[in-house]
Image (cartoon, rainbow over all chains, first blue to last red; front, side):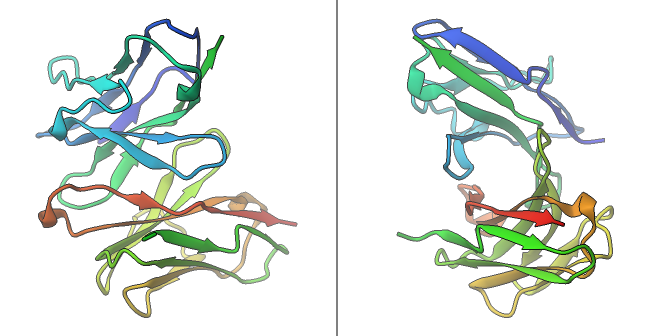
Length: 109
Length: 115
């Protein structure tokens, strides 16, 4: 079965601390993975995709096929990073996404 | 700005009274999706349209229907809402997957309350 697991419901860190939001997936084949973010009172939006191997707002995520993980990392958290983060897997043979339950990141000063 | 619009943002309906949620897009995307998101849960895909082709998820209840009269608009109809249907309903769009740069664009959501 195709599945996305985000084990942490809430992650609280201090400003300037490193952040790692965990995501594990279950998929047979070549997965396509994404991180979506929802800031307070804003719509869900794409943060980054593994195919692009990009860094957005200081966040990076590396696909580790051996560990079936796609953890989101940032070396120095900022207060404006506080949001809900969803890991998502593009379903095989189609356009649909399978989302994890999300992790709330809270960055305090 | 090109975007995905959902109306209304908040909808209150009575148990068993049909309700329709609306989504429109100015992105000219081929694909439109409807998700249901309950509190503290992942967005769950109900169905999607790829152009005019309707794709229902296997576990979507028959109570949920959808219409896409043209490229820009897509509707979610709940024929007989139950208390368990109270949720946030998200509309999203994307280009055809072969176009590259695959990304789903989300609307702000409609929060449905069933009384």
